[in-house]
Length: 285
Image 1 (cartoon, rainbow, N blue to C red):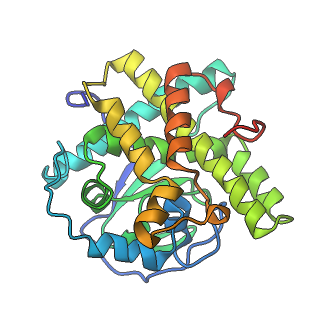
Image 2 (image 1 turned 30 degrees about the horizontal axis):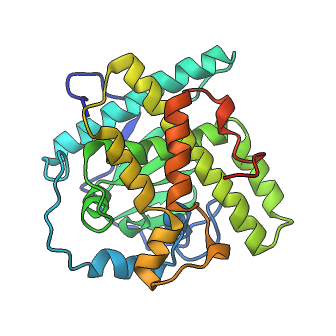
Image 3 (image 1 turned 120 degrees about the vertical axis):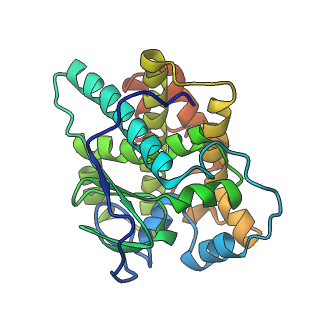
């Protein structure tokens, strides 16, 4: 990904190097209701299985990537540039609709962090908190993405940020509020199915961002889109559950299958508009 030499965002809050806080139960903002639900929100697998997956991997293949081994300051610069790209894209798209985009902050943390949704550990993974409209990221997740989920590459990392920004877009549009209202009357199975549509729309919005970032900044290098597609595939519910459990439980899916996540990101990248991202009305996900 071509990212050097462009502006960084002023909305990055660096909380790395600090400490304190507690491990948490996360809640609110449509993120789910189990222990470390933000983890489930992002990956759709039980915490014990994810902890086992992330800490017990014995893969001997080195991560082949452009930023996992980069100095911390370079990683932060990369994140800042990607966030700035999302700001430029979504400001423009909102303006075209006669609306104003409220830029989110991205909080970098190390180990544990406090948010309006509660406390979270690094094992939570990246998440968006509607309560404070912040994105949260421990940079060590990029190592886990490459090592444990076999998704190396800087554009895979950019996809993750684009997905979380997609949730902010949903929040700005009132989608998350409406989903939370609907969930109050749904069974667990129905609620999970609705959450899948939320996540697939965020994947679509990540694709929309990539489409416009390429048009405006020519960010893509050979293999970049494949990196994003690999990441989308790696965090599909079926792939994660099969890797962690050896079998899948479709009724517990909260993010969609690998095939669905890849398809909606690709659709957003190919179309580049908001109209094609209505995952709530379509019967064919």
